[in-house]
Amino acid sequence: MPIKILIVDDDPDIRDVLKLTLSEENYDVSEAGNGEEALKAIHTKSPDLVLLDYQMPILDGREVCRLIKKDLLLRHLPIIMVTGKGDITDKLGGIDAGADDYIVKPFEPKELMAHIRMILRRTSIDLEANPLTRLPGNVSILNEFSLKLASKALFAVCYIDLDKFKAYNDIYGFEHGDEVIRETARILIRAVQTVGNPDDFIGHIGGDDFIVVTSVPTSDAICKKIIDDFDKTVPSFYNEADRNRGYIVAKDRQGKAQNVTLLSISIGVVTNEFRTIEHVAQIGEIGAELKSYAKNLGRSNYVKDKRVS
Image (cartoon, rainbow, N blue to C red):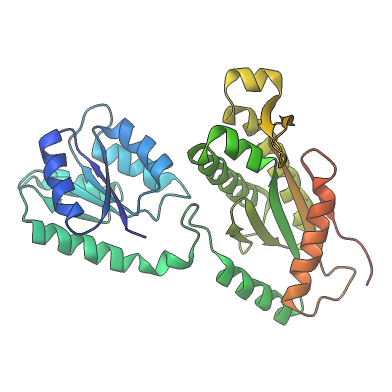
């Protein structure tokens, strides 16, 4: 899969030159003409690297960079700031805003390629993370489970899943679906930061499936916070007509139209408070069972395992 690079510059001639240069190296290139367009493209196209001009209308490069680096899901996105020749103020401004590197106009194509390769090598350590949310993926999740089991301490694993997400994706498209997943990740991060513990773990299993590993005492507060924030955010994912109606019309697997209510979130909480858990597979099995039960309730909710083995 080719590496995706976003070019942000208000000069169309410079964008054309950069696009030609990068395309020859088989990069997947997209463009934005100002800072506002850049932020929209970053949220919808999920680039692997941004070439960002410093001087632009609407939002300059420094402000765009600051907004990206403030976002918990985007702060790992590498940014190369493109500055004017010899302007030390622009260079310092870009670095202060969080840019990973800078290059001065005019530049040679070989110089640009060297900067890009260097930055991509530097960020390759994040490849195990989910590419959409940058949250730790399945390798890290399994390692976290193993550490918890080895510690013999009490723990809680919250399995989180979106309800009716496939129908939403079918009607609104993958770009909107991806933004729902990213916003869900932000909600999980905020919940853990607000009511969780400093060493809590958040992982992205894939698609619309996430996990939070926390302590037993804080698991209820985290689940309630996630559900409350998600339900408040859900209406913003829909257009006005669907929002007011409270459902979308989608086709089931037999091709028949059906009314599908707005997205909700279900959480199954696995703990070793009342039962002994001896291996990683047990956590997944119990989590799938609890989450399936929670989804049958038809609204955002969580189910916590209190059964004794």
